[in-house]
Amino acid sequence: MPSLTTDQAAQIEQNLRGIAKTVENFRFDHMSDLSDTRLADLQKAETSLLKASEALNTAEMNLVMDDADGAIAGLGKVTGLLKADVSKLADVTKGLEIATAFIQIGTAVASGNLNGIASGIESAVKALSPAKPTTKSAASSKDGQSEDGAADGS
Amino acid sequence: MRSPNKRRIRNVAAISVICLLLEACVQSSAVDDFAKVSAQAAQLFPAVAAIPYDGCLVREENIQIQQVTSFNGDISFDQARYAAACAEEAKTKVRLERTYAVLSEYIQTLAKLAGGSDPVYDKQITGLADAIPGLNKNQQAAASGLASLIVNAFAKHWRERQAAKAIETAQPYVLEITTLFEDDIPKLLNESLNNQQASLVSLYRDAYQRKEGNGIALTNPVLVTIEFAEAQRAIDDKRTAVQGFEKIVAKIKEGHTALYNNRNKLSARDSIEELFQVASGMKTQVAAVQKALKR
Image (cartoon, rainbow over all chains, first blue to last red; front, side, top):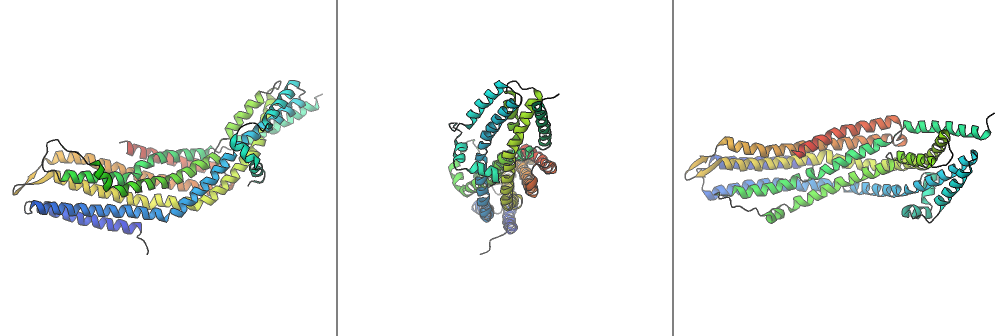
């Protein structure tokens, strides 16, 4: 069954409010002529019409969100994949340490700096050490994802 | 005569300076800026999403007040009954918040991948290069520049490729969800506010006019109008917040479309400038919504 459009729902809500307003005006225009019970009934009718209008509003809001369910799930999935990529970024820090260590060695060798060579080797050993507990980085390195991802752009 | 080592270092330094200059030309912090404003908007959204639920609670309170026949200062509002009467609105509020949160979380996560965290690497590189003993300034610049080059090849380009893929996949979803929040939801929130206003008018008419014996008794219209104006202003402020949010979502759509169109050149100057402009427009709207909700 085709569902209401938002504009159609809004139109019905306006109509319900219009009827509620007519009841309200009648109640105030004939206040002195009507019994207390009758006035109370009219007030209830007015309230029920406004509640019906609001109930339709809530139902329509849920319907439009139902229609967008696929997109919401799809975007959630993309976010999940992005989060996985973000976690791979931890490997970059490792890569940076390794790269910098080799640059230290290279630069020290080029400039004949013995202290620099020693320091560079020390840094390289530290950076290449698998014992460093960078959890996700270590995990993704194990299955080769980070290296592959970096190399082939996967 | 200069030693070959010194020449080599000079070359590395020259290349590195060019690399550093090239990298300095492009800053991907526009994505961060965009995400930051989106996050600010997301913090404001619960107040907007609560409009139907809050309106329902107010309506229930109005109904109770309208049934009052005398005043002695002793009135208790049955919050449990209100909550039961507004259960559907409460569920819808949560659903609205969650739906918007999906959009917001996507943008925040995208910023973590595509955003400008390069300066952090640059700082690390500089720090590490500084720690190499015996290097002069040029040599340190050379070491830093080369490390930057490696890091950018390793991280930045990979990040951009991954971000481009995510942006491409997400674009139809983002369009659909932003259309929902730009077109349908604001219309319905405005209708909800119209319902609240109708309930409010009815309440204040009862405050102004009542049956007394066989006649009608009227209250001072100025006093009633003062009270009514205050309540009316609260509804108007919510309407302003809804309008502001509509514009924020339109900007999110515009920003993501800009990212989609430029997905293969995310670091290009024109791509960044376009996104900065969108983020700047969003900031104005976020401030407008903040102002409306604070009153």
